[in-house]
Length: 250
Image 1: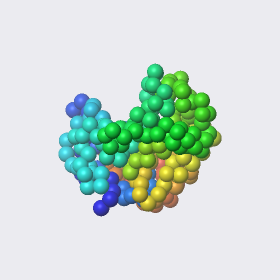
Image 2 (image 1 turned 120 degrees about the horizontal axis):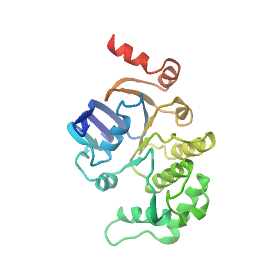
Image 3 (image 1 turned 90 degrees about the horizontal axis):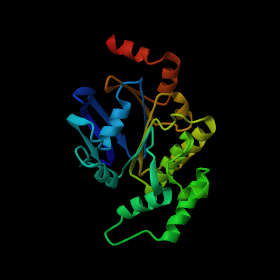
Image 4 (image 1 turned 45 degrees about the vertical axis):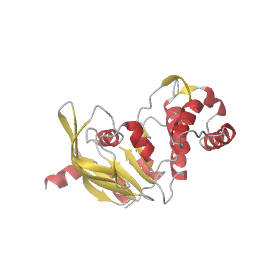
């Protein structure tokens, strides 16, 4: 089946166990959201799936369209079709946005082929216009000196240009004002289609008013403890995460 499938995933960092048997499946064409309190393992999940070297996989499996991704290098995982939008995007002085994205596109083409400059810039400018980004940003170093909102728009721009099979958005709403949140969410919504799965990781229900998920999962102590529809996010907003923990204990 075409999906991002995680089964009984266990992971740790510096001998501290973070993920405790997490299972989740995101088929193409669906948008899933993970919510949970600080320290529940949400960002760890995103980093493990993208091949972050600081995390150790202690058990379980994760496949992308039935192909294993655990233990692969981040670049290999990216080429297979997984994109991670970071909570805190890195600054890369000296590398322009245009050159960064163009190099990433070229790396995904068969050996000897390269994207045509005219076609590339036409597509790039179209996506920038959709995100309300000044076209002059193409000549600026990646995220260098950008505001929080500019960094997040740049992440969505990269995601749009690379057109991955699966997208993980790790707290993309972090640090965004209402206007930036709306623009970034519209960029994500434009990418929704039957051939792409999207996982949104967030603390707050407000993002899910703009990116309406098909399913909401609650994460606590390194695993999924509850799954429901979009109304579950509203219930969490009203009752808090302690309600979930109390139910789990009971």
